Length: 439
Image (cartoon, rainbow, N blue to C red; front, side, top):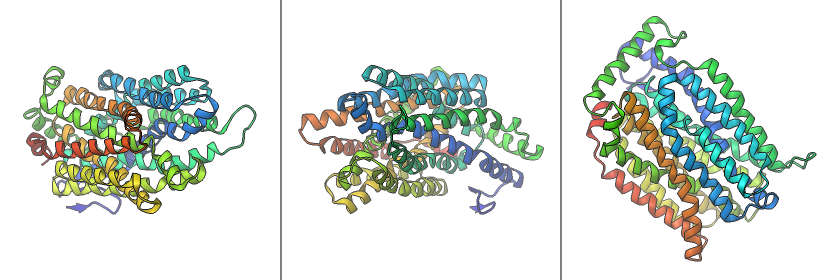
């Protein structure tokens, strides 16, 4: 393995034009797609920072918050499949730009929440408008980057999650701490400012993105041809090992197993995301605000390192599945520790858990993207993305377990057990077709 330059992803020795095309594509698309994911994740996770303010200002109870936070994932999961089929038909630049402008407008409208019904409705609508973004980008990356470097580009894209929460913690906390200005409170400014970022970025995305390498004027003819030829050869190899149309994909047991794994990953992830500010608040014995927002960035700083390094290790060793299982094992064990540990050990364990939940995802996505092709890839990625329903179940399962066992830690322990179960499922999964495709 070698690097084309100090900023490039690692590429196996091959044709110089192909190496340069991949490096150029990474430089142009990687940072922008990561920025889009930052804004996307910020708009779905900022509800965690608004939790206490919504309870005080809009009368949102603990149960109402858990339901509203989770309702997003019902519409999000159900609408991803048709959205990705539309993207496959009309192209990424048009559809992704439309989605970003739409969900930004809905996020801004959350500033007007005045009760449970409006809270539920806007969370459902946010799920509808944001549903196609993530599976659309995963499919889009298969149109641009060969499988042998896809773990690394997925890792670059997933940097958007910890960055969103590193930036989002202080930003959301500072906006929450703003003094009342006219009729707007701090939490209303938070939704207004952060939603407007998605609208502006969506407009720019339409001008900036190209659907495929063949459309990219910023690549030379030789670079376009080398990259497109490599992607075509890879697609032909995948057609011999995995489904390429919708009906065979829907009957494929391996796809259903991928769906289960991703569902459990999302339960772990959003069990942490939605309650991380609350857990840090409890560790510090302070209300959620700027201080808690700043300390809440620590787990995401650690996750930033993990999500950058682990997919590169996975690509180098060609052991994505095994590394994903080990990552979840570490995260599950750390999840058992932090609820009863002191502030310093608790924060360290929380950092390990959160890092594992995020870093395992680019490792996981190398498996289905190395197996599915054409319409089956567009539909299958979105079908697997329905595992985001785990984000609906996680907060509600936590509330149920806390109440049933009369312990504020019961829900956290249950989510930790689910993480350990998922580590075992991944470790016992066999996906030889995907591994051959990535080789």
